[in-house]
Length: 534
Image (cartoon, rainbow, N blue to C red):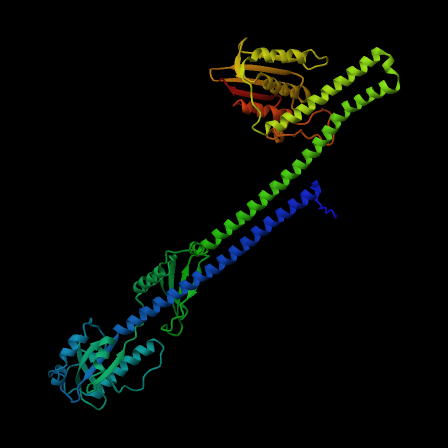
């Protein structure tokens, strides 16, 4: 038969510290990793918001220019035969009026051009020369290359009609339609002689761009505070929302293909903290939950390890105390029996009686200690039954005080009662032991002066045991009623005990439906018992 053994790692103070350091390091590393991960995620989401703003700006400009291209699109229809400007529009064009009505439900436009007299005898070449001169003046003012010649142009006289001039030809009346839709409707009529012109605006309708930009932001569920700067040739041309100020504004530049050379549009906006946090919320929330769960589990583990360490210390302390307490009477009894056996004490009746009395006293002490341990085990179960009866509490405490005051070199105990006769329905045996444990604790560990107060009102009886000692600290206040707990004094135990007296007292008071608590003042330690009147 082979016996197997397992090694139990001893929970020494050094080992406990190593575990504490490991758990603390794990917690800090976990928090650090989560903070780094969330910060990286936040940076990515902030860049994502910035990209969304960039895309919104480009989409708004693209949509704006697309609408411009559709509306600023002219279709000029000219007849095949030459006609006088003052004459009516040709019959061929008038037959298309039904097509115009369906296709051209558009607004009129105004085009600035050179005015000239509407005369059939007007010199066409002279008109073209005048137009060229006027255009070159405009080009020169804009520092652009001038034109060498003009072979023709169209002049709008009304919103839907005008004239067309070509070099070497006479003036012709034309029908003008606006919009890409009208041009697409007329493409099926191949017999028409048409000219298509796409107009190019040199200015932006900033309010319209702003409206389109807000629509883009709404679709992307972002709402940044922003301003738009329009630059032409490195010169600030216009600022939208100039009231937005700040030195730490972020900026994106439009990449729209509609912008001219040396023309740039910047959108400056505040740090999108709120939008980035909204995008990061789920990740941050899950990260916090996981981090808190890990910290809680590690903290709970540390508490269990700490309790195990304390239990190990209590166990070792209890074994040491029991060994010490039991060794003294056992040794004394052994010495007495050895004397009777080896030194002919049996022949001396007086010595024999003395040795027997000593042995009997020591056996009584052993019996008391065993009874205390057994009572402690009974308190943890429901098997302890109280024999409650009407008891004179005043007389009970008075007898206890007198018994303790009879001992020599004993600390004086003063008993004060609001009434000479105070009764309560209690188990007299256990209540007496409980009160005696508190008095005994004050004598062993308290100050030089001990005072017991007894009070009773219509619903409860209160017993207070106070002493002038200050050996108890606040760190021991919550543990003083724990089983086997003794106030630590290093490796020395100058006062005998198992650490079960106050635990016993607390359990007995609770089984009577009462409470016990400890008050620590500057120079006064008070145990207060309160149980209801039945």
